[in-house]
Image (cartoon, rainbow, N blue to C red):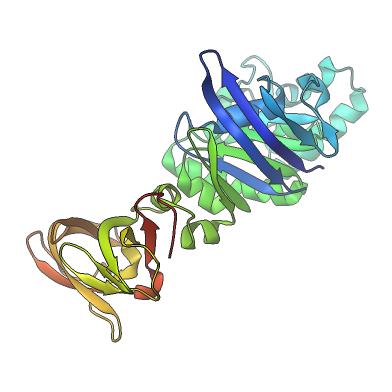
Length: 352
């Protein structure tokens, strides 16, 4: 397998539209890297430049030690799995997986070895004689992945491969892809707009916005130490609470409460960030508290979310599902001040 590196890569379309702006990113050998962000953030363009499907305006991309800027896609030793399965409906699973190898003139014995090996890894052995119409969505996605595996590429590129699946199947296939990554000891670069997929699948996550890389880190670090408000708001569900505050020393003052910060952040105007799970249904000894006027209650079995206001600020809290709360109630919430975030109002960068 191989590492991948983007070195100051820019993609500019006509009219000076920047799709990717000065991207520098190192993907380690056998790493599962996830590029995440909303539509139009440049993540798929970055993947397509690596695949050779888009030209590079500036910078260079390496696969291993080779610069691939001007290398034809067929010579890059990569395999790509798209959102669409793109299976041939008249061919069996075996023939769909073998087709690319046959077109390349691969010896029949080698084709059979590769297809059977991939089928074993993906648990497709009993399905090799079936046609795509006889398969579930998850099985079709596994066939599309198998078609990539038989090429024995250095790097697997996956562009929104789960988008067409229903919720239950997405979870099953998400788990399956993680198993295959470990079994293949391969380098995976995975593009998604779904932060849950990113958090659960990636060894590291690269968060993008408007063509610019915002932060690269393992999931726990992205969640616990976001570099800026954009990353903090994009990662996590429900999203982080953002509250305008003035800061005097270590005290952050909002419209309806005050909190003591762990240390003086050195800014006078900021935005306080509080994860819903950093709010508890009762004040904790040594922790601050605030009074939430509840407007909406959502009970999701293992979770309960309270949506309401404190002073003039909207707040979401994640509390014990057994707590009996109705819209209109006032609930005293504790705040774990060790889990607070503070962002500079001017730059939106994290200062706490």
